[in-house]
Image (cartoon, rainbow, N blue to C red; front, side, top):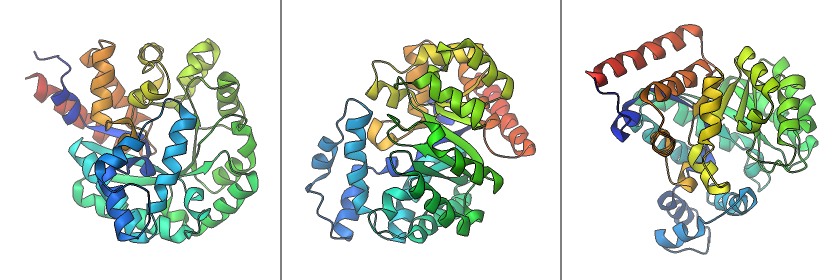
Length: 340
């Protein structure tokens, strides 16, 4: 029986991706192409020039590169091309279901209409059916923007309610706790939207932020969130409520000393629905299968643990129980076939 975790195994394993920033899939080639198409001077002339700018050591230095890169996204066609390029890679990684984060404020704040952003992304989501990828959109608030900006953004989003599955919260967490946006999250929940929030790794007040998200704001998932291991009571709560945690090993290794593999395995053992995702793959040099393989190699994860992580990704997804059962059965068939 073949129970080795190989890159071939992680590539072909059916999986859901629940933590993926579409703006973070802007590969150097596409960035350069869009800059030329839209006559945007990005100060770089070659793919190598662009690659050199993808250099950071913590969250703040990453964001300082990440946001200016978005200036090349100007038209509906650009957002479509961005999402379509990612979705093709998702299909190659056997991602069967993906819930894609997007940051409208990063675009509306520079004069790009909300409609331009969401219509381009949504068309790619619809077209992804041809790739056998089921996709949906999660609109995130930028937590370093004001509550009023979030309120206005949610009001705009309600005009496109049928194109959005949930609400998230991302960007710089320092001095921007989840509770800052409690009202907007309540309004989103009342409109029938799902709720998740970033609780980034090793932040000031990490545990307090996780507590706010789980105990007060009733989020269904925590993005990153592995600092929860510091509080066994919160770990037990997450397991009991079937809260999904979306770990991103390669991005963790860029902004901290390690991938948080120890925490991932600890949470797996505790019965928490933790999954593996790629976060901003163009910037952190690896798509979802690369993340599975990297964490498996570094922390000697067994094939059974990798399979459980994939199953968790579907169990934590915002899809029907019937869809979950179909995808879980796909995993079982794949494993049976792979093990021979």
